[in-house]
Image (tube, rainbow, N blue to C red; front, side):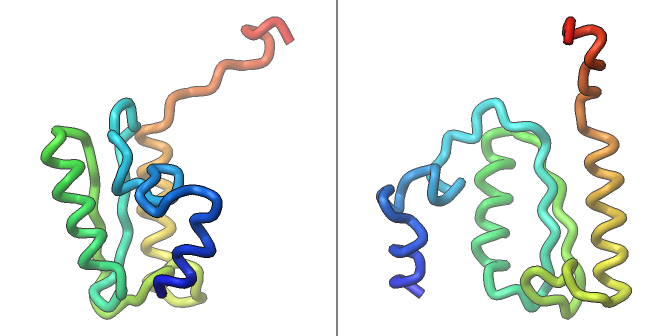
Length: 106
């Protein structure tokens, strides 16, 4: 996986926040939602990210689905429907209303 990571990261160093949010400051981020599964190969890293964000006092919401793998919400399964509903509700709750074109003078 190191070769894939190096290829993905080019031309930036692997520790750049442009490559991985792990190396970012997390300043000025909106609330974060993480949807994962207990069989997600990246779950360990996801849990560490959750701890790092919480340690900075930032809002993070975590939703773990039993027996689900990485990117399970893209599959046509009931658990994906549940995850997508959670995502939609989260976005609706935390998003800032966008200004209407009329108020922008457009």
